Length: 397
Image (tube, rainbow, N blue to C red; front, side, top):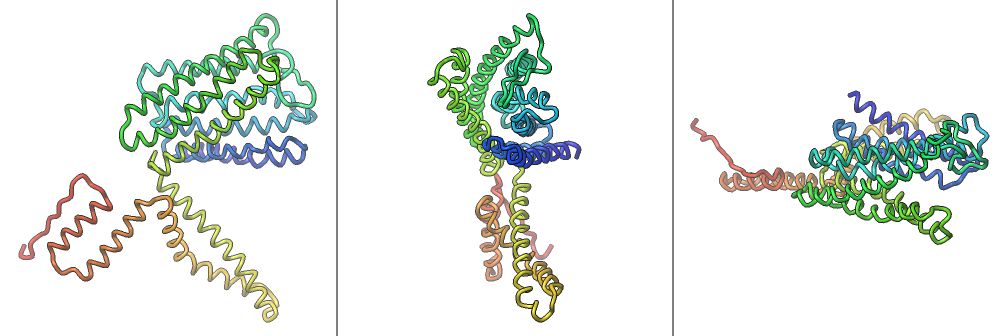
């Protein structure tokens, strides 16, 4: 229960940041692209579902922490853009390094632990520590580097926690080393996915396939970014800057959209983490709430137009609308459940149709042997067991 509460609290925090950021963009006349934090909803939602159902699986928590870091980073970007609000220096400091949290956590560690939430073997733990070193070196090298913060603000903001002296001069090198370690970790993560794909069978193989594809594609823009950083970054000329910008947005799209999409396909289509019931109920009751809410508002407005000249008030319209919505609940839920099963949970839909057909045949079937064969066939189609046998007790016992 505590893990579930924490998971959905983190999800709520992300949603709050995602809603507050566009408001701050409008108030502060910020960059409209900063309000795109909402595309991280896939990370937050999938992470909350997995973490609440399987709290010992690292995948859900990686997705949730990455989503919250993305929300904080984007909010701080807008907050510090004008540099005149209280605490702008601290907000700029957070904004300078949170990027490496929400980008590196899913990119480096998800390929190592997906889908089981653990590494392939004990030897792969060294790769996890390599990734931890990469994130730590990059964050520390950026967060405590002296001088002006590298953030999109309208005026220079000096790092309030910058370290001077020889240590401060070495920090940019530490950050660069962290990026190199991150590239090595990502390459090993792709190798881990390939090995997991080769060793997996059946449904697990289908679960890993899409994720492995996204991970392999994400390796390309990441390597390009590392090469651009080594070759000179901003001083490399317009073509190098354009290449870096293209690679950056490609990597962001693959991480924020590609990875949760791949995990979503594994969950919805290949029954990963056994959370189909949660998703099914969410789809059904979400659609049911919208349907009943729209029906209630529509009927209230319509009945007010019809009855207002007679009743001089809306109490009767509200009462009649409430009764109508109450009567509509069960048939609407049944119909929406049927549509959801047909579209997203085909096996359950087919099983229901098979049982319905068997029930109709049962009324007309008199031969006990034919009925037994029909029953076994229905069990095979709906339950798909390894073996089916039917035992009938004699009437004289």
